Length: 149
Image (cartoon, rainbow, N blue to C red; front, side, top):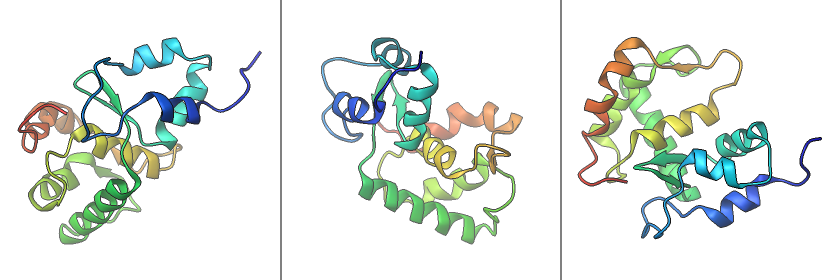
């Protein structure tokens, strides 16, 4: 029997905003899902809807203003690199120029990819990870992260 109610409010109450003082308790995504009374499908849907992400074993949520700034920066980077966002593209194709020009300090790759996962359609995602993306993840994510999330 599916659970009733929406996990969005529980996730909102449980998870801290990214960029603020982290709580004493670290909650990985796996721990969050294991401790809330919803199915993994319901939680995953809310996770994507809310642009939640896990960084350094913390599950975090962004502020709406930060999402807007990042989205504007993604659009600017895609325009500067002539990357059409209505076709398949490599996540790293936009990440590289984004890292150089974003106004967000210490931008985590996890936040960037969570936002693109949210705006890309579930069927036939526009953004995709290529084999090169996966090989470069650790190198690129460190480009902006002077300290952990």
